[in-house]
Length: 139
Image 1 (tube, rainbow, N blue to C red):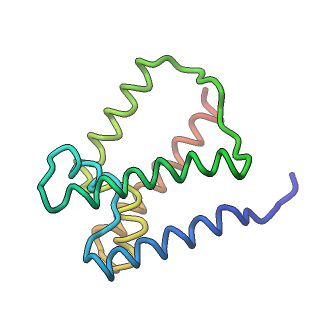
Image 2: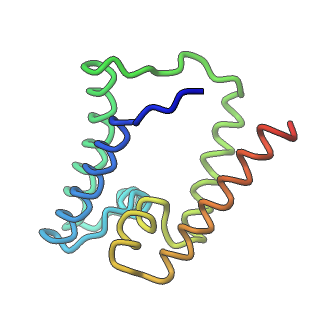
């Protein structure tokens, strides 16, 4: 297997870091996706507009990526819609229990040297590695 430098991933990571930094500097807000989306579900008048624009920006960024940069999008899922709903619910519960998601802890929290975020991100990575191992070797 040949190794290639994933330039697109590097560029995307840099953009995420820059956007999270600018959000914190100019708005005093942490760009944690689960927190942004939770705020949309329980809107406060002064927070709703920026949260909605943030969410629309994420969706439109994905659409623009597919339209203009020939990004590959899977056409079919091998699991049913019920399993997708269950997975979404479990992710939502996990982000509430963990007080945030990978973007909040991994990008913003580590950048602020938050001990809780450093531990949470390490736990995310260990569980992800174990999941990959189980999926590749035990299924």
